[in-house]
Structures are given as C-alpha cells and as structure tokens.
Amino acid sequence: MARTLINVPAKAKRGEIIAIKTLISHTMETGFRHTNLGVRIPRDIIDTLICTYNGEEIFRTRLHPAIAANPFVTFHTVATESGTIGFRWTGDKGFSATASAKITVE
Amino acid sequence: MSRAAIDRRRFLASAAAAGTAASFPTPAVSQKAGPSLAVIGGGFGGVACARVLRKAIANATVTLVEANATYTAPPLSNAAIAGIYPLDHQRFGYDGVRKTGVAVALSAATAVDPGKRTVTLANGTQLAYDRLVISPGVAMRWNAIPGYDRRAAEAMPHAWNDGGQVGLLRKQIEAMDDGGTVVVSAPVNPARCPPAPYERASLIAHYLKTHKPRSKVIVLDAKDGFTMQRLFQAAWKELYPGMIEWIPPSSGGSLASVDAETRTISTDFDKYKAAVASIIPPQTAGHAAELAGVADRTGWCPVDPMTFESKLVSGVHVIGDAAIAGAMPRSASAAQSQATICAQAIAALLAGRQPAQPTLSSSCYSLIAPDYAISQRGKYRPVDGQYAEADGGLIVSPLDAPRSVRKREANEAEAWYRAITGEVFG
Image 1: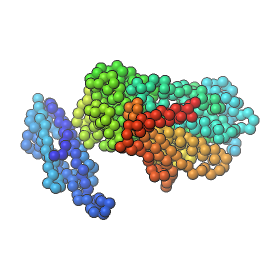
Image 2 (image 1 turned 90 degrees about the horizontal axis):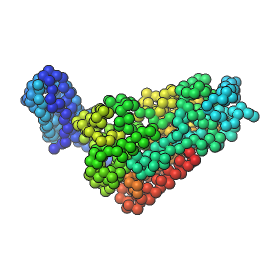
Image 3 (image 1 turned 180 degrees about the horizontal axis):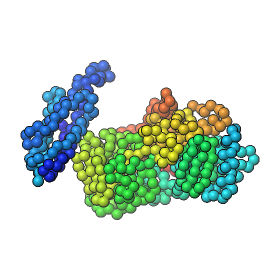
Image 4 (image 1 turned 45 degrees about the horizontal axis):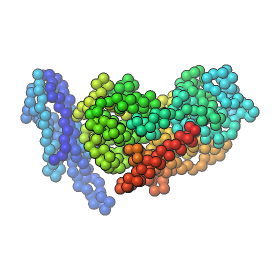
C-alpha cells in the first residue's frame, strides 16, 4: 500500500472555505523512458484522485504522465457538515489507495 | 590607458589624501600609476583574490572593501555550534591581508557605478576602479518561507552567513533542556555548501548524545535527496541510532511556514514544536551583486568561466557563492580556487595577454563526529562555456570504509582548514 499524507482541518465553522492537502508516494513512471538495454519501461502512474465528503463526490482530478513522482494535490472546499472526507487514488496496474479524515463542523 | 582611467585614479588619490577611514598603504599615485583594483567582500573568495592580485600585478593598487572587522569562517562552524571548537576557531581579522600590501576599507559598499567605474562606501569614500571583483557570498531570501524574516532568525538562527548567528545557535543548543527536539531545515539548491545542513544535524546529534541524550534531531528537507546521502545516513545509523530523523518532501518535509514566537514549524501535513530550530532558508547572491547589477533573474550571477567577468556588466568580476559556476559546489575551497583564476585572468587582461585555460578544484569535508569525516573533491574545467567535472569527476569517500579512514579524514579536515585559513587570512 502506498504511503499517503492528508491534511484536513479537524475543526471548521459552517460555511468556511477549507484547504485540503494530499500527498501519495508513487514513482509516476511515464512510459516514455527506456532502460540501458533499450527496453521501454512500461507506464505506471496514478491517473485519478477522487475526494468524497460524507460519501458525495466533491473533487476529482485526472493525472497524466507529466506529473512528477509523489503527486501533491491541494484544493479547497466549503465545510458544510461534520463527517468524513475520503480520498481514493487509482491508476495503472490496478493501483488503488484510500485515506480518510474526520472533520467537525460547528 | 584612457584619459578617464587617469581621472579616476586622481579621484582615488584625493579620497586618500582627505584622510577618510579607508587607509591606503602607499600613496596610490606615486611613481608610475598602475591599475586600481577593488574587491568587495572579505570572505575566502574576496581576500584570496585581493592577495593574488596584489602579488600578480606589481604596480596595482588593490583595495578590499568589507563592512566587518572580524570574519566568521563557515567551514567547520557546525563544529563550533556543537561546542567541539571555541567560536574563536572560526574568527579571523584582516591584518594578514593588510601586511601583503592590500588596502582594507572597513566600510560597507553602498553603491556601484559600473559606467563611471566607482564604488561608494558607507563612510563616504568613493573608490575608482579599473577592474572590480565582487565576492558577496549569499544572502537569505527572507519570507521565502512564510514567517521567516530577519526577526524570526533571532529565535530560529540560520547560522549560515553571519558570525553572530553562529554564536546564537550554539547558545540555544547549550541552553536547551534534555528531551527537546532540534529541528534543522535544509534549503533547496542552489545554496551555499550543500552538505552543511546534514553536517549540522550530525554534530548537533553528537552534542546531544553526549550532554542531552533524550533529545533528538529532525531534518525537514526541501529536497528528496542530498549530497553524500548514503554516507550520511550510514553514519547516522552507526553513530546516532534513532536520534536523527530525515523527512524529505515526499514524506511531507517541505516547510509551509514558521512561527518564531512559539518555535513551531509547519509543513503541509504536520507541525513540529522545536526546543531549538535552525531554519536555513533559500538563498540568493549576496547584496553587493545587487548593487552592481550582476545578478540575473535566477538571483545568481552569470560569468565568463575563463575570467569570471560578469556576462551582464563589463569590468566587474564575480567569484564565490554568488557566481554561476556550473557543476562547482558553493564552498570556501571553490571560492579560493575561483579567486586565483580570476586574479590571474585580470592580470592577463591588463597586460593584454590571453587568460590561461583554467582548472579549478574544490574540496569539501563534512564532519559527522569529531573523529568521523567524509569528503568530496573535484576538479572542474569549462566545457561549452560552463564548468563541468574533469578528470573522472568527483572523488567521494567510500561507503564501506573502516573507522580509521573516517578518523583520518577528520584529521585532514582540520589540516585543510588550518591551511586555507592560513593562506587567506594569515
């Protein structure tokens, strides 16, 4: 399982705009490189990150071979209610990783 | 010899005769007037260059401009921070260089006019020059890390280009309680002396292991890899097991902000409450580079590798940390080597000769404990207009060497330091 880091504020006021930060360790092999023997190294990237807020999708991004290793993605959302913010990364070779964080909205 | 040059020299003479704070050893325009050469920056590069210029050009007037009377040498300063050496081990004055016939103006340069070829000093003196060498070292990019400004540096010393800061960090380490966390942040490249943050973490761990064994060191790095990384990490495992934690950006180590009041360091994913924090911020060419307009948009100074003359401003040469010198690291040793090549090139240019094809060298020792050092040494030559590693590239300490080799390198480090400081400041 890839190592993930997420930063979601533990507490927020209702209606507040909050920053969410994510980082996942992954080589993001482009598929354009060759070994010393000329053998092409197959593409192995994370291609999708989906974020859900109490089960509802609030953010989705596509990643492409130009994205560097260990993709760091940050975005904003509005704190609407207490609950769970979930993250799911998927990619080549059946890659899948998940993480989640609790948020209390007052 | 142009008319303008003679006028400049007359101006210099009048400044000297007026009895300003800059002391000129011999009347600048006695006998047959030679060229006027000014060097800004009293570190390894500037002082070495002034001395070679003085020696290489018999009739030249060489003036070294430096704001401070005492210089704190950065090499081995991490050992002084960790209490291995007294602070005096790092401190040097300018009597040695004065004795060689270089005039030392102890005043900050406040303006450079490359058109009129003059340098103005804080004490009001104006120096005319035929050739100017700038060896300004590095300046900190304040607020590049949000919250890290000059004031924050008092609470969280960078101890990087300033003697007072070195003493401050040493005092804070001595005063901290056992069980605290020391945070060292390592900057992005390019920066002065790439292995130094890791040497600092090592030697602080050495001090803590001896005096405050429940404490630890966290290195927050802006880079996912660093120079001699495997050597450092193997040594940490051997000498300081469990005491040093290195957190690269891929593990969330890049700094998001610092709070000097509470000594809290925030990354994108975590907060660290430090007993002592040494925040080494991103860097740029020293202030004098800005005065002369020799830095480009990168913040560093492009130079002709044959002469170290600025590619942006003619008649001004830039050496040391501020210069863009390709594969050469930014070290005292590199600065001294560049200073010699630059001075010889200036002598050749003034004599109407072609400067010789330069070969530069740099040695860089990192102390991990008082009896444990590693090193990298390299030779560099210009290839396609920029310095590249020559003669088989870098020579780095072997990974699997016995302790006797590490001890020998620690002795070599001290001998190297005595030699270079003797040559430059002695």
